[in-house]
Image (cartoon, helix red, strand yellow):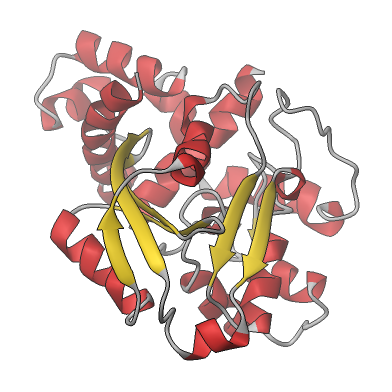
Length: 281
């Protein structure tokens, strides 16, 4: 099913890009279907299979107006409200089952020298993923448009480590998030290379519930660095764990979704998909 969604996502992403580039013309279903070379009937069904909603409703969830509503309703109290913590609930806090362990200062300084990093490629709802792990947990997860390039980026993050193409339990557990069946989900362990400030920002991102949005300034206030929005933005841009550490939920104060390390179209898709899950529930 996930592999099927991976194939679907490529077509959905093409449609989202077309809509983003032509939103002023308000393209209808027929226009979008023609752009992605399928019939309107098939495209409507394909989109509903992927997100559970019509393309028109999905676009409402990725609009500036919708984003502003979420920011207004949630940003002030996002970190103070006690969200549901059941594993079947979409509003549970990520840090209840995602644990971050920072690498030691020695490991950080030496670029992960003497660490063996296992890696593998997998399919997800939002395209292909490269996931890597140490003996302590997942250390890297990135969406992939080109496998060779993605692997080179992984090696740049850990220049002195050795690499082995193997999938392990840490990787499989992390990837289980994409199945949307968390009944048997174990705690996901992350083993990250970052400064104290970066780790603080990444931990803050884990507090943003599915379907929630916050600004860079909101994160800065939460970590008691209200004037550090720019530094927060840099730390978010250096987030090494796609989707699990949900940097895609941080947007501009204007309501614009903004840029994303793995592509603005993918960010739009994830925000819209998550909003759709909340409204379905």
